Image 1 (cartoon, rainbow, N blue to C red):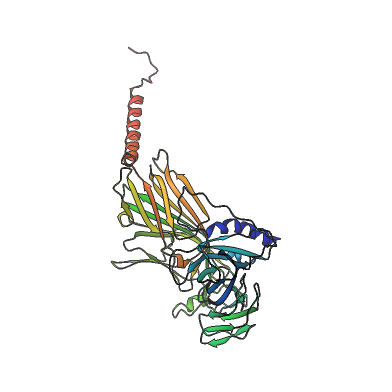
Image 2 (cartoon, rainbow, N blue to C red; image 1 turned 90 degrees about the horizontal axis):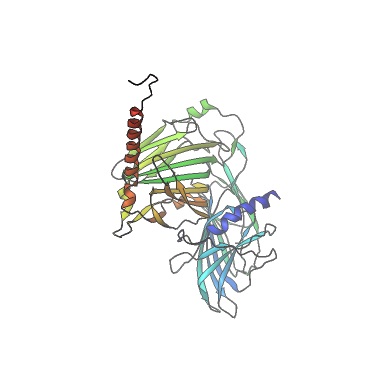
Length: 486
Protein backbone atom coordinates (compact mmCIF):
# COMPACT_ATOMS: atom_id res chain seq x y z
CA UNK A 1 0.00 0.00 0.00
CA UNK A 2 2.90 2.36 0.68
CA UNK A 3 4.05 2.35 -2.93
CA UNK A 4 0.52 3.15 -4.11
CA UNK A 5 0.31 6.09 -1.71
CA UNK A 6 3.62 7.37 -3.05
CA UNK A 7 2.37 6.91 -6.57
CA UNK A 8 -0.80 8.89 -5.87
CA UNK A 9 1.21 11.88 -4.71
CA UNK A 10 3.58 11.73 -7.66
CA UNK A 11 0.89 11.40 -10.28
CA UNK A 12 -0.93 14.52 -9.15
CA UNK A 13 2.13 16.50 -10.20
CA UNK A 14 3.36 14.41 -13.12
CA UNK A 15 0.31 14.49 -15.35
CA UNK A 16 0.47 18.25 -15.82
CA UNK A 17 4.24 18.27 -16.36
CA UNK A 18 3.98 16.78 -19.80
CA UNK A 19 1.56 19.35 -21.18
CA UNK A 20 3.16 21.81 -23.57
CA UNK A 21 4.88 24.52 -21.54
CA UNK A 22 4.32 27.46 -23.85
CA UNK A 23 1.54 28.78 -21.61
CA UNK A 24 1.11 31.84 -19.43
CA UNK A 25 -0.61 32.71 -16.18
CA UNK A 26 -3.93 33.39 -17.83
CA UNK A 27 -4.27 29.75 -18.92
CA UNK A 28 -5.78 27.29 -16.40
CA UNK A 29 -4.20 23.93 -15.69
CA UNK A 30 -5.91 21.22 -17.71
CA UNK A 31 -7.81 18.46 -15.95
CA UNK A 32 -6.74 14.85 -16.11
CA UNK A 33 -8.78 12.13 -17.75
CA UNK A 34 -9.32 9.23 -15.34
CA UNK A 35 -9.53 5.82 -16.95
CA UNK A 36 -10.76 2.54 -15.42
CA UNK A 37 -8.27 -0.01 -14.10
CA UNK A 38 -9.13 -2.45 -16.89
CA UNK A 39 -8.45 0.13 -19.61
CA UNK A 40 -6.65 -1.13 -22.69
CA UNK A 41 -5.58 1.22 -25.51
CA UNK A 42 -7.55 0.63 -28.72
CA UNK A 43 -5.49 -1.53 -31.06
CA UNK A 44 -5.54 0.95 -33.91
CA UNK A 45 -1.75 1.15 -34.43
CA UNK A 46 1.09 -1.25 -34.94
CA UNK A 47 4.81 -0.60 -34.57
CA UNK A 48 6.38 -1.50 -37.90
CA UNK A 49 9.98 -1.00 -36.73
CA UNK A 50 11.28 0.11 -33.33
CA UNK A 51 14.74 1.00 -32.04
CA UNK A 52 15.33 1.79 -28.37
CA UNK A 53 18.62 3.39 -27.24
CA UNK A 54 19.32 3.35 -23.49
CA UNK A 55 22.18 5.56 -22.29
CA UNK A 56 23.73 4.58 -18.94
CA UNK A 57 26.72 6.91 -19.07
CA UNK A 58 25.31 9.17 -16.34
CA UNK A 59 23.76 8.68 -12.93
CA UNK A 60 20.29 8.50 -14.48
CA UNK A 61 18.79 6.66 -17.45
CA UNK A 62 18.16 8.40 -20.74
CA UNK A 63 16.06 6.52 -23.28
CA UNK A 64 15.26 7.36 -26.89
CA UNK A 65 12.72 5.29 -28.80
CA UNK A 66 12.47 5.74 -32.56
CA UNK A 67 9.43 3.93 -33.88
CA UNK A 68 7.55 3.79 -37.19
CA UNK A 69 3.85 3.53 -36.40
CA UNK A 70 1.12 2.54 -38.85
CA UNK A 71 -2.61 3.10 -38.60
CA UNK A 72 -4.23 -0.32 -39.04
CA UNK A 73 -7.75 0.94 -38.33
CA UNK A 74 -10.36 1.93 -40.90
CA UNK A 75 -10.61 5.49 -39.51
CA UNK A 76 -8.07 8.29 -38.95
CA UNK A 77 -6.45 8.11 -35.49
CA UNK A 78 -4.57 10.72 -33.47
CA UNK A 79 -4.06 9.19 -29.99
CA UNK A 80 -0.98 7.07 -29.30
CA UNK A 81 -0.46 5.52 -25.84
CA UNK A 82 2.89 4.94 -24.13
CA UNK A 83 2.89 2.49 -21.18
CA UNK A 84 5.05 2.57 -18.04
CA UNK A 85 5.18 0.27 -15.04
CA UNK A 86 3.68 1.65 -11.85
CA UNK A 87 7.11 1.25 -10.20
CA UNK A 88 8.80 3.83 -12.43
CA UNK A 89 6.06 6.11 -13.76
CA UNK A 90 6.57 8.61 -10.91
CA UNK A 91 10.30 8.75 -11.75
CA UNK A 92 9.85 9.57 -15.45
CA UNK A 93 10.74 13.10 -16.49
CA UNK A 94 11.18 15.16 -19.62
CA UNK A 95 9.01 12.95 -21.82
CA UNK A 96 8.81 14.42 -25.31
CA UNK A 97 7.31 13.01 -28.50
CA UNK A 98 8.21 14.51 -31.87
CA UNK A 99 8.05 13.76 -35.56
CA UNK A 100 11.54 12.46 -36.26
CA UNK A 101 11.49 13.45 -39.94
CA UNK A 102 10.02 16.93 -39.41
CA UNK A 103 11.68 18.60 -36.41
CA UNK A 104 9.38 20.98 -34.62
CA UNK A 105 7.47 21.44 -31.36
CA UNK A 106 6.84 18.34 -29.29
CA UNK A 107 3.39 16.78 -29.36
CA UNK A 108 0.96 17.20 -26.47
CA UNK A 109 1.53 14.37 -23.99
CA UNK A 110 -0.21 13.76 -20.67
CA UNK A 111 -0.68 11.08 -18.05
CA UNK A 112 -4.21 9.70 -18.44
CA UNK A 113 -4.26 6.62 -16.22
CA UNK A 114 -4.69 7.40 -12.55
CA UNK A 115 -5.85 4.15 -10.95
CA UNK A 116 -3.31 3.26 -8.23
CA UNK A 117 -4.17 -0.44 -8.44
CA UNK A 118 -3.41 -0.78 -12.14
CA UNK A 119 0.07 -2.28 -12.78
CA UNK A 120 0.49 -0.18 -15.92
CA UNK A 121 0.02 3.54 -16.38
CA UNK A 122 -0.29 5.29 -19.73
CA UNK A 123 0.84 8.55 -21.25
CA UNK A 124 -1.31 9.68 -24.13
CA UNK A 125 0.23 11.54 -27.06
CA UNK A 126 -2.05 13.51 -29.35
CA UNK A 127 -0.75 13.74 -32.90
CA UNK A 128 -1.04 17.21 -34.51
CA UNK A 129 -2.89 15.67 -37.47
CA UNK A 130 -4.87 12.40 -37.44
CA UNK A 131 -3.05 9.57 -39.20
CA UNK A 132 -5.11 8.19 -42.06
CA UNK A 133 -5.60 4.40 -42.52
CA UNK A 134 -2.49 2.52 -43.69
CA UNK A 135 -0.38 5.68 -43.30
CA UNK A 136 2.89 5.65 -41.35
CA UNK A 137 4.65 8.17 -39.09
CA UNK A 138 8.10 8.05 -37.48
CA UNK A 139 8.04 9.10 -33.83
CA UNK A 140 11.00 10.03 -31.65
CA UNK A 141 10.19 9.46 -27.97
CA UNK A 142 12.72 10.66 -25.36
CA UNK A 143 12.53 10.59 -21.58
CA UNK A 144 14.62 10.22 -18.42
CA UNK A 145 14.20 7.78 -15.56
CA UNK A 146 15.54 8.97 -12.20
CA UNK A 147 16.56 7.10 -9.04
CA UNK A 148 16.19 3.55 -10.41
CA UNK A 149 19.83 2.49 -10.73
CA UNK A 150 20.81 0.45 -7.67
CA UNK A 151 24.37 -0.13 -6.41
CA UNK A 152 25.39 -3.79 -6.22
CA UNK A 153 26.93 -4.52 -3.77
CA UNK A 154 25.06 -1.99 -1.67
CA UNK A 155 28.06 -1.38 0.62
CA UNK A 156 31.67 -1.02 -0.54
CA UNK A 157 35.05 0.04 0.81
CA UNK A 158 36.16 3.63 0.67
CA UNK A 159 38.47 3.04 -2.31
CA UNK A 160 36.53 0.21 -3.97
CA UNK A 161 34.96 0.29 -7.40
CA UNK A 162 31.22 0.91 -7.56
CA UNK A 163 28.90 -1.24 -9.66
CA UNK A 164 25.31 -0.43 -10.61
CA UNK A 165 22.49 -2.73 -11.64
CA UNK A 166 19.97 -1.83 -14.32
CA UNK A 167 16.84 -3.98 -14.66
CA UNK A 168 14.82 -3.74 -17.86
CA UNK A 169 12.98 -5.66 -20.57
CA UNK A 170 14.71 -6.61 -23.80
CA UNK A 171 11.33 -6.08 -25.45
CA UNK A 172 10.40 -2.41 -25.40
CA UNK A 173 7.13 -2.00 -23.44
CA UNK A 174 4.43 -1.00 -25.91
CA UNK A 175 0.67 -0.77 -25.98
CA UNK A 176 0.67 -2.06 -29.57
CA UNK A 177 2.05 -5.10 -31.40
CA UNK A 178 5.57 -4.66 -32.78
CA UNK A 179 6.71 -6.32 -36.00
CA UNK A 180 10.44 -5.70 -35.62
CA UNK A 181 12.54 -4.17 -32.87
CA UNK A 182 16.00 -3.79 -31.36
CA UNK A 183 17.36 -2.50 -28.03
CA UNK A 184 20.81 -0.95 -27.53
CA UNK A 185 22.50 -0.20 -24.20
CA UNK A 186 25.40 2.25 -23.96
CA UNK A 187 27.65 1.84 -20.87
CA UNK A 188 30.27 4.25 -19.47
CA UNK A 189 33.03 1.61 -19.79
CA UNK A 190 33.69 -1.94 -20.89
CA UNK A 191 33.70 -3.26 -17.30
CA UNK A 192 30.38 -5.16 -17.38
CA UNK A 193 30.75 -8.31 -15.25
CA UNK A 194 27.12 -9.51 -15.33
CA UNK A 195 24.42 -9.66 -17.99
CA UNK A 196 21.38 -11.77 -17.15
CA UNK A 197 18.63 -12.48 -19.66
CA UNK A 198 18.61 -12.17 -23.42
CA UNK A 199 21.56 -12.87 -25.69
CA UNK A 200 23.21 -9.49 -26.24
CA UNK A 201 25.76 -8.82 -28.94
CA UNK A 202 28.66 -7.04 -27.27
CA UNK A 203 30.72 -4.46 -29.09
CA UNK A 204 32.98 -2.41 -26.83
CA UNK A 205 30.80 -0.60 -24.31
CA UNK A 206 27.56 -1.29 -26.22
CA UNK A 207 25.12 -4.18 -25.86
CA UNK A 208 22.58 -4.94 -28.60
CA UNK A 209 19.50 -7.08 -27.98
CA UNK A 210 17.92 -8.25 -31.21
CA UNK A 211 16.88 -7.58 -33.85
CA UNK A 212 13.68 -9.45 -33.05
CA UNK A 213 12.11 -10.07 -36.44
CA UNK A 214 9.08 -12.03 -35.23
CA UNK A 215 5.95 -10.08 -34.28
CA UNK A 216 5.74 -9.33 -30.54
CA UNK A 217 2.28 -8.82 -29.00
CA UNK A 218 1.33 -5.69 -27.08
CA UNK A 219 2.48 -5.69 -23.47
CA UNK A 220 5.04 -8.47 -23.93
CA UNK A 221 8.09 -8.29 -21.65
CA UNK A 222 11.38 -10.19 -21.46
CA UNK A 223 13.13 -9.42 -18.13
CA UNK A 224 16.88 -8.82 -18.14
CA UNK A 225 19.47 -7.05 -16.01
CA UNK A 226 23.04 -5.85 -16.33
CA UNK A 227 25.66 -4.87 -13.75
CA UNK A 228 28.32 -2.39 -14.80
CA UNK A 229 31.12 -0.34 -13.28
CA UNK A 230 30.30 3.29 -12.40
CA UNK A 231 32.82 4.60 -9.87
CA UNK A 232 31.35 8.05 -9.72
CA UNK A 233 28.78 9.70 -7.46
CA UNK A 234 25.07 9.48 -8.21
CA UNK A 235 24.26 13.14 -7.62
CA UNK A 236 20.61 13.84 -6.91
CA UNK A 237 19.04 17.05 -5.61
CA UNK A 238 15.81 16.24 -3.82
CA UNK A 239 14.99 19.95 -3.94
CA UNK A 240 16.39 23.01 -5.68
CA UNK A 241 15.03 26.47 -4.88
CA UNK A 242 16.17 29.08 -7.39
CA UNK A 243 15.45 32.80 -6.90
CA UNK A 244 15.97 35.38 -9.65
CA UNK A 245 15.54 38.95 -8.39
CA UNK A 246 15.36 41.93 -10.75
CA UNK A 247 16.31 45.45 -9.68
CA UNK A 248 15.62 48.17 -12.25
CA UNK A 249 17.10 50.95 -10.12
CA UNK A 250 20.30 49.03 -9.43
CA UNK A 251 20.50 47.53 -12.92
CA UNK A 252 21.22 44.18 -11.27
CA UNK A 253 20.00 40.61 -11.64
CA UNK A 254 20.66 38.67 -8.42
CA UNK A 255 20.48 34.87 -8.46
CA UNK A 256 20.46 32.54 -5.47
CA UNK A 257 20.17 28.75 -5.56
CA UNK A 258 19.53 26.53 -2.53
CA UNK A 259 20.37 22.83 -2.89
CA UNK A 260 19.49 19.73 -0.89
CA UNK A 261 21.91 17.18 -2.38
CA UNK A 262 22.33 13.48 -1.74
CA UNK A 263 24.58 10.80 -3.17
CA UNK A 264 22.50 7.77 -4.23
CA UNK A 265 25.58 5.58 -4.70
CA UNK A 266 26.87 2.64 -2.65
CA UNK A 267 27.19 3.17 1.09
CA UNK A 268 30.44 2.74 3.03
CA UNK A 269 30.76 -0.65 4.72
CA UNK A 270 33.26 0.76 7.25
CA UNK A 271 33.66 4.09 8.99
CA UNK A 272 35.05 6.98 6.96
CA UNK A 273 38.87 7.14 7.15
CA UNK A 274 40.00 10.75 6.72
CA UNK A 275 43.71 9.85 6.67
CA UNK A 276 43.12 7.36 3.86
CA UNK A 277 41.04 9.95 2.00
CA UNK A 278 43.70 12.65 2.33
CA UNK A 279 46.42 10.32 1.05
CA UNK A 280 44.53 9.77 -2.23
CA UNK A 281 43.94 13.45 -3.01
CA UNK A 282 47.31 13.89 -4.70
CA UNK A 283 46.54 11.58 -7.63
CA UNK A 284 42.72 11.66 -7.28
CA UNK A 285 41.66 8.15 -8.30
CA UNK A 286 38.06 7.47 -9.38
CA UNK A 287 35.72 7.52 -6.40
CA UNK A 288 32.04 7.09 -5.68
CA UNK A 289 32.18 10.14 -3.39
CA UNK A 290 31.25 13.67 -4.43
CA UNK A 291 34.30 15.84 -3.78
CA UNK A 292 33.66 18.95 -5.90
CA UNK A 293 31.09 20.68 -8.09
CA UNK A 294 31.64 22.78 -11.19
CA UNK A 295 29.07 25.52 -11.85
CA UNK A 296 29.47 27.40 -15.17
CA UNK A 297 27.95 30.89 -15.02
CA UNK A 298 27.14 33.47 -17.65
CA UNK A 299 30.02 35.69 -18.75
CA UNK A 300 30.01 38.86 -16.67
CA UNK A 301 28.77 37.24 -13.46
CA UNK A 302 30.30 38.66 -10.29
CA UNK A 303 30.17 38.65 -6.47
CA UNK A 304 29.64 34.88 -6.02
CA UNK A 305 29.18 33.28 -2.61
CA UNK A 306 29.02 29.71 -1.25
CA UNK A 307 27.29 29.07 2.11
CA UNK A 308 26.20 25.87 3.84
CA UNK A 309 24.44 25.13 7.14
CA UNK A 310 27.53 26.11 9.14
CA UNK A 311 28.35 29.34 7.32
CA UNK A 312 30.59 30.64 4.56
CA UNK A 313 32.62 27.94 2.78
CA UNK A 314 36.06 29.19 1.79
CA UNK A 315 36.98 26.11 -0.29
CA UNK A 316 35.65 27.59 -3.52
CA UNK A 317 37.23 29.25 -6.53
CA UNK A 318 35.77 31.70 -9.00
CA UNK A 319 37.39 32.18 -12.40
CA UNK A 320 36.06 34.89 -14.69
CA UNK A 321 37.30 36.42 -17.92
CA UNK A 322 35.90 37.67 -21.24
CA UNK A 323 35.17 34.13 -22.43
CA UNK A 324 33.86 32.31 -19.36
CA UNK A 325 32.82 32.51 -15.72
CA UNK A 326 33.22 29.37 -13.65
CA UNK A 327 32.45 28.72 -9.98
CA UNK A 328 34.27 25.71 -8.53
CA UNK A 329 32.81 24.41 -5.28
CA UNK A 330 34.36 21.98 -2.80
CA UNK A 331 32.08 20.78 0.04
CA UNK A 332 33.41 20.67 3.60
CA UNK A 333 33.57 16.88 3.41
CA UNK A 334 33.39 14.21 0.68
CA UNK A 335 29.79 13.11 0.15
CA UNK A 336 29.72 9.30 0.02
CA UNK A 337 26.71 7.13 -0.80
CA UNK A 338 23.75 7.85 1.44
CA UNK A 339 25.28 11.10 2.72
CA UNK A 340 23.60 14.49 2.29
CA UNK A 341 24.84 18.04 1.85
CA UNK A 342 22.75 21.21 1.71
CA UNK A 343 24.10 24.60 0.68
CA UNK A 344 23.34 27.76 -1.24
CA UNK A 345 25.19 29.75 -3.85
CA UNK A 346 24.51 33.13 -5.39
CA UNK A 347 25.89 35.73 -7.75
CA UNK A 348 25.07 39.03 -9.46
CA UNK A 349 24.90 39.96 -13.14
CA UNK A 350 24.29 43.04 -15.27
CA UNK A 351 20.55 43.30 -15.90
CA UNK A 352 21.08 44.77 -19.38
CA UNK A 353 22.34 41.37 -20.58
CA UNK A 354 18.98 39.76 -19.78
CA UNK A 355 16.32 42.48 -20.07
CA UNK A 356 14.89 44.22 -23.12
CA UNK A 357 12.58 47.25 -22.93
CA UNK A 358 9.74 47.48 -25.45
CA UNK A 359 8.59 50.81 -26.81
CA UNK A 360 4.98 50.46 -25.70
CA UNK A 361 2.67 52.81 -23.74
CA UNK A 362 2.37 50.22 -20.97
CA UNK A 363 6.14 50.01 -20.47
CA UNK A 364 6.59 46.43 -21.69
CA UNK A 365 9.68 44.46 -20.65
CA UNK A 366 11.03 41.08 -21.80
CA UNK A 367 13.28 39.09 -19.46
CA UNK A 368 15.19 36.07 -20.78
CA UNK A 369 17.05 33.95 -18.22
CA UNK A 370 18.00 30.25 -17.95
CA UNK A 371 15.35 28.16 -16.22
CA UNK A 372 18.08 25.97 -14.72
CA UNK A 373 21.81 26.55 -14.29
CA UNK A 374 23.55 24.69 -11.47
CA UNK A 375 26.42 22.16 -11.56
CA UNK A 376 27.65 20.65 -14.80
CA UNK A 377 29.23 17.27 -14.08
CA UNK A 378 30.31 14.38 -16.26
CA UNK A 379 28.28 11.93 -14.16
CA UNK A 380 25.18 14.13 -14.46
CA UNK A 381 22.89 15.71 -11.89
CA UNK A 382 19.20 14.91 -11.42
CA UNK A 383 16.58 17.00 -9.62
CA UNK A 384 13.50 15.61 -7.91
CA UNK A 385 11.83 19.00 -7.55
CA UNK A 386 12.80 22.45 -8.86
CA UNK A 387 11.14 25.66 -7.71
CA UNK A 388 12.02 28.83 -9.65
CA UNK A 389 10.96 32.23 -8.33
CA UNK A 390 11.25 35.31 -10.55
CA UNK A 391 10.93 38.35 -8.28
CA UNK A 392 9.90 41.32 -10.42
CA UNK A 393 10.00 45.02 -9.48
CA UNK A 394 7.19 46.41 -7.34
CA UNK A 395 4.40 47.55 -9.62
CA UNK A 396 4.98 45.00 -12.39
CA UNK A 397 1.75 43.67 -13.86
CA UNK A 398 0.33 41.64 -16.74
CA UNK A 399 2.96 38.92 -16.18
CA UNK A 400 3.28 36.15 -18.76
CA UNK A 401 5.94 33.52 -19.40
CA UNK A 402 7.14 30.87 -21.82
CA UNK A 403 9.50 27.93 -21.28
CA UNK A 404 10.25 24.53 -22.79
CA UNK A 405 10.57 22.90 -19.36
CA UNK A 406 7.46 20.88 -18.38
CA UNK A 407 5.80 22.42 -15.31
CA UNK A 408 3.52 21.01 -12.65
CA UNK A 409 2.51 24.23 -10.91
CA UNK A 410 2.37 27.96 -11.72
CA UNK A 411 1.72 30.62 -9.08
CA UNK A 412 1.75 34.40 -8.92
CA UNK A 413 2.48 35.63 -5.40
CA UNK A 414 3.72 38.77 -3.62
CA UNK A 415 7.22 39.10 -2.15
CA UNK A 416 7.73 41.90 0.38
CA UNK A 417 11.13 43.43 1.09
CA UNK A 418 12.45 46.56 2.78
CA UNK A 419 10.47 49.78 2.09
CA UNK A 420 7.92 48.02 -0.13
CA UNK A 421 4.32 49.22 -0.13
CA UNK A 422 2.18 46.61 -1.91
CA UNK A 423 4.99 44.10 -2.41
CA UNK A 424 6.83 42.77 -5.45
CA UNK A 425 5.09 40.60 -8.02
CA UNK A 426 6.63 37.10 -7.98
CA UNK A 427 6.25 34.34 -10.55
CA UNK A 428 6.77 30.88 -9.03
CA UNK A 429 7.24 27.87 -11.32
CA UNK A 430 7.57 24.26 -10.15
CA UNK A 431 8.95 21.33 -12.16
CA UNK A 432 9.52 17.67 -11.26
CA UNK A 433 12.06 15.08 -12.40
CA UNK A 434 14.48 17.39 -14.19
CA UNK A 435 18.05 16.55 -15.23
CA UNK A 436 21.08 18.71 -15.96
CA UNK A 437 20.50 18.37 -19.70
CA UNK A 438 17.79 21.00 -19.18
CA UNK A 439 20.55 23.50 -18.32
CA UNK A 440 20.25 26.84 -20.06
CA UNK A 441 16.77 26.16 -21.46
CA UNK A 442 15.34 29.67 -21.64
CA UNK A 443 12.67 31.12 -19.43
CA UNK A 444 11.07 34.17 -21.06
CA UNK A 445 9.02 36.45 -18.83
CA UNK A 446 7.12 39.47 -20.16
CA UNK A 447 5.58 42.13 -17.93
CA UNK A 448 4.43 45.75 -17.94
CA UNK A 449 6.27 48.21 -15.73
CA UNK A 450 4.75 51.72 -16.06
CA UNK A 451 6.91 54.82 -15.74
CA UNK A 452 5.03 55.83 -12.59
CA UNK A 453 5.82 52.51 -10.89
CA UNK A 454 9.55 53.16 -11.26
CA UNK A 455 9.24 56.07 -8.81
CA UNK A 456 7.24 54.16 -6.22
CA UNK A 457 10.31 53.18 -4.19
CA UNK A 458 12.05 56.64 -4.22
CA UNK A 459 8.79 58.35 -3.26
CA UNK A 460 8.26 55.83 -0.46
CA UNK A 461 11.78 56.41 0.85
CA UNK A 462 11.39 60.21 0.63
CA UNK A 463 8.05 60.16 2.44
CA UNK A 464 9.46 57.80 5.08
CA UNK A 465 12.43 60.07 5.78
CA UNK A 466 10.20 63.17 5.75
CA UNK A 467 7.86 61.49 8.21
CA UNK A 468 10.77 60.79 10.56
CA UNK A 469 11.90 64.44 10.45
CA UNK A 470 8.38 65.79 10.89
CA UNK A 471 7.81 63.44 13.82
CA UNK A 472 11.12 64.45 15.40
CA UNK A 473 10.28 68.15 14.89
CA UNK A 474 6.86 67.67 16.40
CA UNK A 475 8.21 65.86 19.42
CA UNK A 476 10.84 68.59 19.87
CA UNK A 477 8.12 71.24 20.00
CA UNK A 478 6.31 69.52 22.81
CA UNK A 479 6.63 71.04 26.28
CA UNK A 480 7.24 68.15 28.65
CA UNK A 481 8.40 70.22 31.65
CA UNK A 482 6.64 69.65 34.99
CA UNK A 483 7.16 73.19 36.43
CA UNK A 484 4.76 76.15 36.15
CA UNK A 485 5.06 78.21 33.03
CA UNK A 486 6.16 81.84 33.60
